[in-house]
Length: 42
Image 1 (cartoon, rainbow, N blue to C red):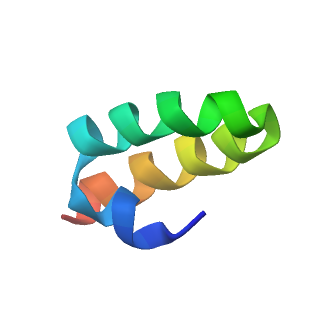
Image 2: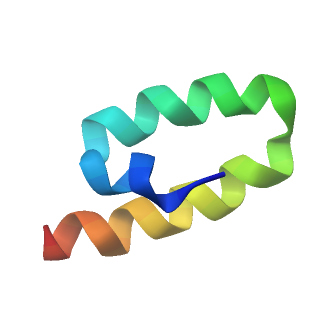
């Protein structure tokens, strides 16, 4: 649920998303949208 995980990078974010997918699919949607924007900036 923390954005810090997504800040690590697109590769790391994808792995975290898979783990969160088991807890709740709604969370994945929010994570997927942020990684793309954050990934471009760095």
